[in-house]
Length: 305
Image 1 (cartoon, rainbow, N blue to C red):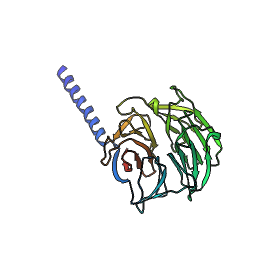
Image 2 (image 1 turned 60 degrees about the vertical axis):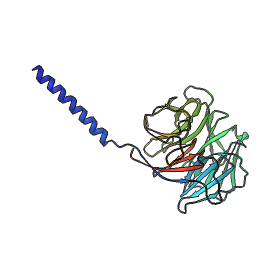
Image 3 (image 1 turned 90 degrees about the vertical axis):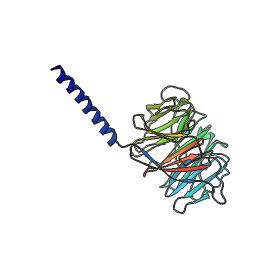
Image 4 (image 1 turned 180 degrees about the horizontal axis):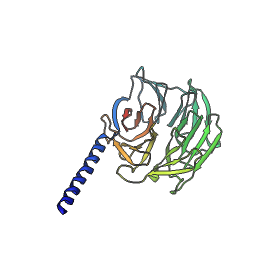
């Protein structure tokens, strides 16, 4: 009888192991395919790209060397996006496709400018708008709201496209809802706000009212943890993409904050980075990463998870 029990225990453990293996083989994992890189054109030298956003087949690039660029994907053409303001250090950038508006933060002027498709200024936000050092931007095209991370106030500000302050939240600290140099921001399809709380080594998530929901990550060098999180994006499935400037990689986290995929390392080859910063992902899963010291934007296609 004991022999039979032993045999059954062994068989049961093997059956369980078989199910685990079959499940792991059938489970879809994220797959990242390199598509192309956007770099210098004949008469245009890309300096140190930071913020990026895409709309209507055009990729807009905030280059901290003092220029705004636009890449037309159909024609594979890189050009200047000329505006009526002299920018010194463009950093964050946000697109509003339905309105044809592009907003840019400038680290030298410590202001945010919004431009129409012709490059004419529509609004300008600065000290009178309570901003100190605006950095990362995100455009909620549906509501017409502009989200701004401010590393001077250690806060997030939300404006409409007429320059009216809708709300702000945060303040400096290490507890839930507080920030230590928030650098980038993204709003998902449900209105949840994701903020890279860079020097707290985490991502904080808020509802559309600015109320704290949860924190993802923490300091570390394994999946789900960060050295210096910067650019952030969320795909249609709720997966969170985070650029890490210390480890020169991009992490993908599931909705619970579990690290499910990491790609990239220090280098100059395809899929390698040197001080990556900005990130943008579109509805088709096309992923754009600003690769600062390699002076390029790398473009990938995400499939699977």
